[in-house]
Image (tube, helix red, strand yellow):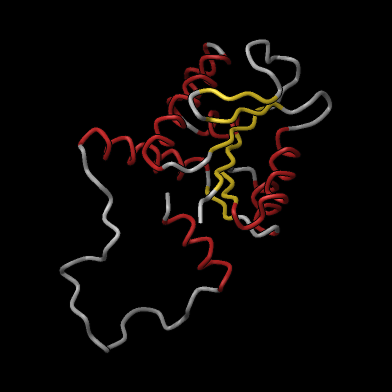
Length: 175
């Protein structure tokens, strides 16, 4: 199952120390840096990615729906917020969506629709790790730890994650 990653653009930019410094200099520069990072991540992982920005008339370079380097770029319409667009997309994609945002309202709504969620800071870390692995030529292993010995003895907490939490974790593991 492919995961459609929906990114709250300005939320990720403003949560990132690197991107927020670029954003303070020039708004378009911060957006472009995020799109470049997402494009590099998409090349490695292959998941479809849509980044959503508030579009209060500032998108002279982009149409309200555009694509650059394989990343779909959406700007909200006049009188609409990016949060509303993200919520609508999460409601449409439901369990196929993974919403990247640190906005509690957006995260709660997306989770209620069945979409997986990850904070902006965590996702930036995953993008950085993927970029590092690409530079080093490392391939993520799908198998477990070879040092782990099979045993029937139970260790750790006896409580199993809820089905919703397990599905969310399964989507996050694909990142």
